View: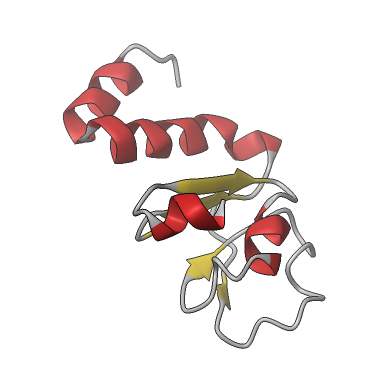
Length: 95
């Protein structure tokens, strides 16, 4: 995970998994979100813990939980394939 981030790759986590990113130091200096309370108990002075459903901060993407999985997926598609591909996929969804 740290190697991937060091090589300029994306890292992403949903629900309680952003805690792993935080423990690895990958959230330092970034905004992030997670399942309610997961990041709150950690000593993360350089992390802006936010309540948004999905946060893409640079090449780190975090999301709150099962209810945000579709938005998380769309954010990943946009990051990896671009906004046009995200719009194409999203257009086919019933919302």
